[in-house]
Length: 369
Image (cartoon, rainbow, N blue to C red; front, side):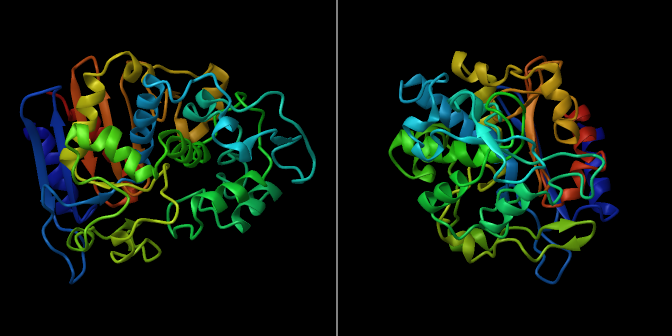
C-alpha cells in the first residue's frame, strides 16, 4: 500500500492529474482510501475529499446490469425473452447488409433481440471499429452519420441528449442494426437500451429503479443521475491531454434529472459508493455471479478490438482470463474486482488520459489487500 500511495502521489506531483480518490478493500472490513490533490488546476480548485462526487461515465454500465439482474430474479425479465415485449419500438428490426453500406440497404433480422443480447452488448448496434480508418472508432460511414443526426448522444454522454425516453427510443428504432442480433459485440448502444429496458420492466424511471433495487439496499446514498446543488458544485473539472473540457454538463445541469437517464454513462458517485457496489458483487449470489462470466466467443472478443483489449465480456462489464472483472469510464474512472484475492479496487479521477497511459493498469496491479 505504501508503494501504491507513492505511485498515486506521483501522478499529482508531476501534474498528470489535478487530484484523485483511490480505494482498495476486501469483501468486508476496513477500506484503504487515498485522497490526493484538488478538483482542478484553475482558480476554482478545492482539495479533493473522500466524498467528492465524480462523473462515473461507463462505470454506470455494470450498475445498470446489476439492477437488471434483480428484475430477472424477480421474474420481471427473462434472459432469453425478446426485448420487444417491453421495447415494442425494436420489434422486427432491419439489419444492414454491410455495416458501411447505405442505410436503406437492409435485410430482416434473423431473430429478435433478446434481453441477454442487450446485457452482453450483442444486440447488433454500437460503435463501429475499423483500425484502418480515420478515425478508427465510428468512421463517418452512412450509418454513423445517420445516428449522429438524430441527437441520440450514443458515443459519449456530453453534450447530453435533449430527448425524453420515448422520443429517444422512437428515433433509435428508425436506425437499422449494424449486425445480426447475437452476432457481434458492439460497444455502448446496448447500455442506453438496457437503461430503458430496466425502467420499463420496473415500471418507474431508471433513476428510481436504481435507487430502489440497488442504491438504497447497498447504502449508496451519493449515486444518481442528478445531485443536490451543493454537491453538483463539487464535481471536478474534466481533462483530456492537458486541456480542460468545456462541453461537459454544467453543475447546474447536474441538479436536474436528465430528460434521458443514460444507462451507459450517466451516473455520478463517490468512492465509498463504488466500493459498496464492488463488495456487493464480490459477495453476490448466483444471479450476480452470472454477470461475471465471459459470454463472448474468441471471434467476438477479437472483433472488440481496442475497446475490449482481448478480454471477455459478461453482463455490462469486462471479464479477464484470471477471473478479474470490472470496467472503466471515459472521464478517468475505474472499478474492478479480483475474486482470487477478494479485492475491490476503485480509482476515481476526471482525467481521461489515465485510461491510456498505463495509470489504471499500474493501479490495478498494485491494489491488493
